[in-house]
Image 1 (cartoon, helix red, strand yellow):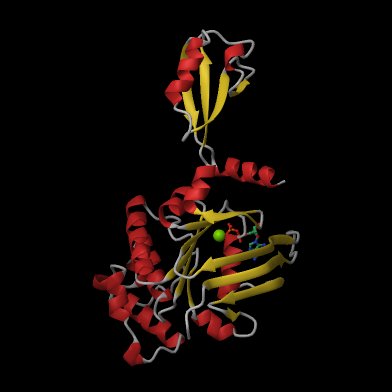
Image 2: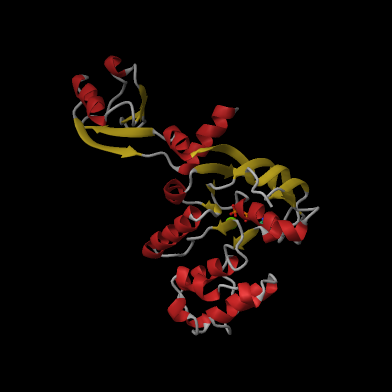
Length: 313
Ligand code: ADP
Ligand code: MG
């Protein structure tokens, strides 16, 4: 099979979870269309409840879509459910594992499940790659959380899928292990695997992904190469507390994007890449304001969502 241009293509993908018990009906995905290029590290970034896992689970065959189409490795998931799923390895958000198997047994079982013939299995190679070779005979319940997460990645790789999908790969993982997981993901990518990951950490998406789609309330509100997206997040807020609370914005500062707060403090919005904070402070002093305290704020992901949704409106 020749390699397609896109690892994943979805069009007008929609998911409505039916009402059950006291839970009302929930529209988790609202007509999402997305093309994920082969060879990329692609991030789906969004807050909890945005619909990221729903998207992943539809691809994985764990959730049934309500409408729309999805293609994995150029195969429609309705027409070719088995073949399309064989092209992905999915690592779910929750750690799920049978505690009574050793890592080696777990990988062998998984390979059997995917119908990988014994002669073509690479159990030890994979365990080595995720740093679990010395734990091959340990019981899973004796592994740390990070080791279990790595074992889940290992299980997703037994059938050599060209696309690896990681749902919140570092949730609940400590900082050090996070780095080592990132490193391993990059290595897989360098070896040719297309990587798709979801995260609610901007830092993680920024560090790993070459393209990022921002998901909010089941919609994709931005999808851009990472540097372009970050440039949009360039806005900073400088907050100034004068020694004497102000009652008006001084005339000489009115050309700035400036706001007087009820407390008598000032907030100035500026672009980090264009305006140095030193130059701003100079102007504030030239306006005769004596500064008691100051702070700067980077926009939070939520603010960026809001900015983008209003921009688009
Ligand atoms: P994310 O992974 O971005 O945190 P999810 O895809 O898990 O988001 O959830 C999206 C929305 O769908 C949330 O409001 C969530 O409560 C709801 N949801 C998820 N799974 C189910 C389900 N099985 N039944 C009903 N609602 C669900
Ligand atoms: Mg999720």
